[in-house]
Image 1 (cartoon, rainbow, N blue to C red):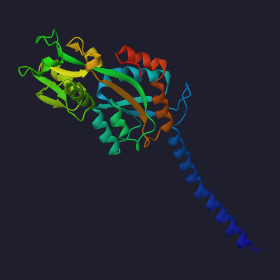
Image 2 (image 1 turned 90 degrees about the vertical axis):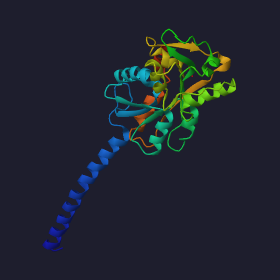
Image 3 (image 1 turned 180 degrees about the horizontal axis):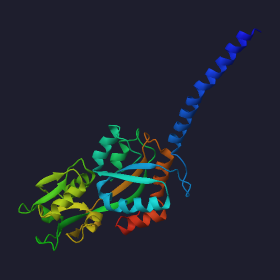
Image 4 (image 1 turned 90 degrees about the horizontal axis):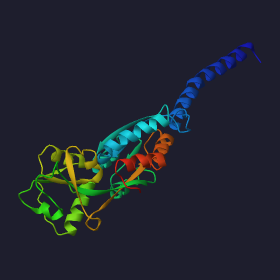
Amino acid sequence: MSLAFTRRRTAAAILTAALLVPLAACGSDNDKKDSGADASASGAPKANLTVLAAASLTDVFKTAGAAYEKEHPGTKVKFSFAGSQQLAAQVKQGAPADALVTADTKTMDGLKSDTGAPTVIAKNRLVIATGKGNPEKIENLKDLADTKLKVVLAAPEVPVGRYSKQILDAQKINVKPVSQELDVRSVLSKVELGEADAGLVYKTDVASAADKVDAIDIPDAQNAVASYPAATLKATKHSEAADAFVKWLSTPEAQKILADAGFQQP
C-alpha cells in the first residue's frame, strides 16, 4: 500500500468524522425537544406549556397553574383563554399549544384528529346573572322574556350559548337578547357594567364576581350540565409534559381547587 493512498484514506476518515459531529449534536437537541427536556423532582418532564382553555376557567386555572408550577419546579404553564369555538379554530389553524380544555364535549369531539383521548375534569351549571341586589327583581327563566329587560346571551356557537338556547327552548321561553357574545366572560361583563339587566352564565362565573353581580339559581330540571374535557394536542412538542398536566387535572389536589371555585366533580 502506497504512502499517498494511506494519507488519502486517513484524511477521508477525519473528514467523515468531522461531518458526523454536528449531525450527532442535532440529533441530541431534537431528542431533548421531543422528550420535553429534563424531568422535575416530581418525575414529570420540564417544559414551558401553553394551554388553550375555555373562558369560564380563567380564574380557577390561574390558581391551578400556580399550584402545578409549585409542585413541578422548572415547568411553566401559560394559559390562553377564549370561547371554546375560538379555541377550536386556533387548533385547526395550527396555533402552537400543548393542551386544550373546552367547556363542552361537542367542541372537543370535533377535534379528534388533533387531540389525544380527552378526560372530563369538571362540570358546571347555568345561572341567571343580574346586577348586584337584583334591581329588576328577576326570579326565574320566564322573567327573561320580558321585553323591557335588557338580556344578553352568548352566541349559539359558544357552548354556554348553546346550553342557554337548549334550556330556553325546552321551557318554550322566547328571549330577544340585546347582544350575543363570543364567550361567557363577555356576557358576565355586560351585566357587571350595567349594560344588561341579566344574562345566562355558568355558576362559577358569578362566584368569581360575587361583589358585582347576583345569581338566580335555575332548577336542575330546567338546567343543563356543562362538561369540561381536557386533552393533549397531537401537535405539541412537549407531549410527556402536556400529558402530565392533563392527568394532574384529575388528581385530588386539582379537583379540590376546581371544587373550591364552584365546579362540580366530573
